Image (tube, rainbow, N blue to C red; front, side):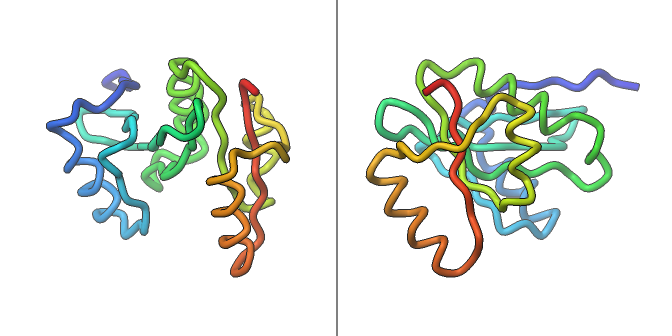
Length: 136
């Protein structure tokens, strides 16, 4: 079995992240102003985006290929990406995922940057979401 590699995706390879999301019918999208992190075993098996915001980062787009779930891939990918950040990291998630992120060191955060607070309020109009942060 080939070892999993966790790394930043080089800018010229960014289209591969959107191809990965589309292949799995995910609504996630990679954005060019973000750091794109992937887990690979030859092909991309998981990805996430870290978008710069207010002297920190907003973690979005966490997705693991279904056949790789429940094997620690997401936790390792998030840990590697967040460890490389030089500021706080915030995320929004369904309340059912709060425990997963708390085990990774995130905690409920009510001190969101203004731009993220406004976005969270908009998202909460349509679905339950909580804001979590790390390195605050």
